[in-house]
Image (cartoon, rainbow, N blue to C red):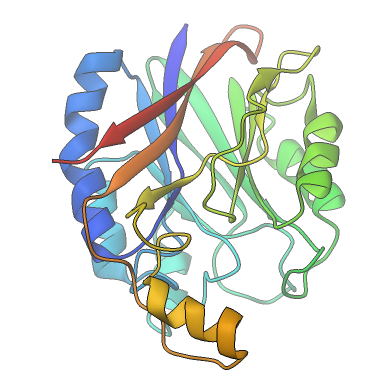
Length: 258
């Protein structure tokens, strides 16, 4: 069996440090073969820089992104040259980077793909069609993990059923709040609507409370930055059989970073 940890959206540079410091210990404690991290909020809560990506890749095997993939101008060229980081596969054509990729871990070839939802999100093509293209592009992988980066739980659940039996895991990101619906679907796909985040639980979705309160109480935009304070890391551990490409177990992992 291959044991793979998927870490939810990393919010801010402090959370990057926390994840990088924690992953080596989790590899030993949980007997991990691989670790994948969603890093789309690493740079100040929106986007990622090459420097932060390299820091995450010093501890993780792969990075997924989301709707903030191109918020940092310097990320575009990096996405073209670094094969261990992917952005959503269903963004408009012509953008830098790729929507799926693969790496070797535990004697298996692990495919990773990301699709972005369309409900309440930035413009994107059909995530269902993009998921089918990603599976075709990852045909040689022993197992495939999908990052379902979407706002609506209904859309993520629909994507989970669409992928059931064809991917080892379909794990939701973007809302930063862990959901209680982690399960194995009948076809052997580990599913959850949202993994959660690596960030401070003392903020609002990992961001400073004051800026968000301006939005909700006074209906005006205000600058928001990652919340200060201890970082909690939300993740999902998937145990999968490389021979069948299906999950045989999935569990929640919560850790407070030192």
